[in-house]
Length: 493
Image (cartoon, rainbow, N blue to C red; front, side, top):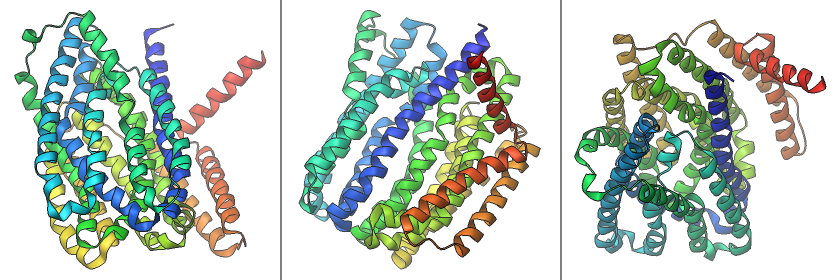
């Protein structure tokens, strides 16, 4: 087998494993959300989401950009064990320092604030996320393009929590129990990662005196600023909604936003899996880099555009199923946020797969800082007047501004590849036809049972879109169709 074939299989395998990992979280969320929303109620769900937003900032600050930096740097050194685990040791040491500083702030200031007195138990419990997230070092496994280990332990732990939620969460007083399970589900398995990495560090005889932290500070700080800026307008909305409007509005926004963000995580998986390879190819083989970049873009758009259409058309059905009538105030919120599937995919593509892979993260940093400032200014007015729906509008504006800034630089510096070609037009045409068809059918065909109607239209949605892509001879659809038939032919022989 040729080396290139092995690489292709590696990307496909890692994509499937990454997909499985994200799917496990999404599956648990989708199947527990209706139960938790009804059992815990709007207020208690809002409390957990509000505290998660606060703690997530400490997770973010303590990580100081290392998750993204680590993937890129590990991918460069994966052939040199000694250098690799020296790097891993240096990054883990930096993380240990930032983790201690984060806990000093949490215990010294946050838990003593009178404004957060009603959330102290939740803050104390969910603060464990800071430690759990940093010791996992998933960036190491992603950098060496080995997703198998972290996928297996993630899936096992998360499905164990899935069962415990239905056993232990019985009424609205169990929101504290849910916060414990939620924390373990997200990061609890990371202790296993740490054991594996420490064993490698010891076996490679890494000496503390050989570690050099200073050389990492400048690049991780640049990435850290960009990551913080992104998360300001990803998390600030929840925090401000809770502070200005109240817990129930956090629950409305979180329901719509969380579902859309989970879907987005599926879309950008291919990008996160391809990032180490793109970083490598950019310096070694520009032709293959451009080819892979174009494939990733098409793949993301094939999923992102119909996803936005789906959330817009079926928002009320989704909200009713996931939250019940108490959450219908989130219907308009989901409609407003639905374009995020497309917008965030573009932002991820330009920011990470183009600029970051080319080590031009400073441009991405500038774009995100600018967007975060705009988000901060607009959110105070929009949330005060329009609550969760105001935050949704600002989220769209902030992401779109970042895209404009990055796209302007990429074109100016002539760093882009030709992504807007005839195949992209075919994807657009297929989605326009899909939108018109489903809207007409949904408005004119009445099904008495709403759940059956939603499921029927959803099946029709997927079928119509697939046939549309094939009819227009979209490159990727035809390619995968040929692969399926060729495999069946080989099997039959």
